[in-house]
Figure (cartoon, rainbow, N blue to C red):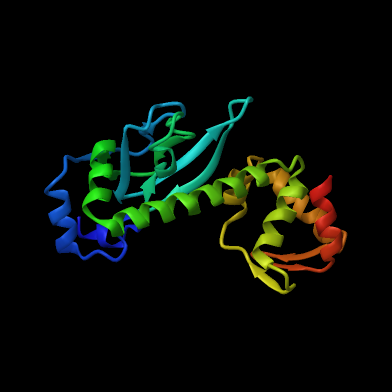
Amino acid sequence: MELLTKCPLFKGIDYETICQLLDKIPYQLKTYEKDHMIAQSGDECRSLMIVLKGSVKGEMIDYSGKAIKIEDIEPPKPLAIAFLFGENNTCPVNIVANNSVEILHLPKKSVVALMQLNTTVLNNFMNIISSKTQFLSDKIRFLSFQTIRGKIAHYLLQLSGPVDGEIILSKSQEELANMFGVTRPSLGRALRELHNEGIIEAKGKSVKIKKREALIKQLKK
């Protein structure tokens, strides 16, 4: 539980104070095995979940039945925190265990009580929601690109910022393919096309943008 001092919800609060707060509210600790469906898209969010051990992934299922990974969540991050309150407080994605995980469940009433007991928790909660909303907005915009080349262009332009230079990809082609919702061979083919056309220079995980304007044009196709 000491890991909670690194959780965004408890940022700036020492371990002793966290323990005192938890002593005043109901909560549960639950464990899940690899590939267990922790929450399904459309399920009501009745509690705030915080990953304490292992990792989970959020994924969406497209109309063809293919799973598109949205993100991996490592300890001690909260899950679906932006959907805990509101009229349509349902989980937006499937949450699946990547391995053996332990999760702290804080019922909705407990979260409200925490915010009433400690203003730092309240401020942290509001900051997390704002950041998560911005992330989801960026993700929706990214998924709106119809072509693989458009997805690659958007990803590289985000990583590079306004200045061209060497970009070291932190993800493998397999991970990028899952994130883009495409097959690995299709992603590799699109990268080779952009490389052969001189728009980018790709060598392993190193990528250089050679023709920024040409890359930007990929977003409009």
